[in-house]
Length: 134
Image (tube, rainbow, N blue to C red):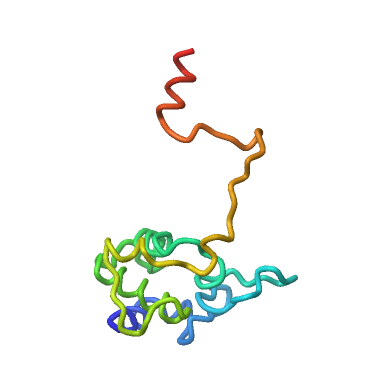
């Protein structure tokens, strides 16, 4: 629950006490079962496929007024809190570099690879180098 304290100090003014957003700031919770509707609500719990993306975004860009000012422990704890509030983690769960990638997000399997030929790019430096050498 350390994450709740970090959230209240650093995130509450933009995302609200209930994590449902304030004014034009996005909601972090809700939206379950809304993606197939006419008005999908894309939140951490309904849309995001990987918990690691949440950690990375918070680490790099939050809080909005002071990006990258949170410690790694604060980022892990507030990530755990947001996931808990979405019903993904238990209240007393903790996250670290080993446990974070193991979190199974509800929409993990909701994305697909676009296999149209015109959307394909080289997937790694090896492929790029091979093309340049021809």
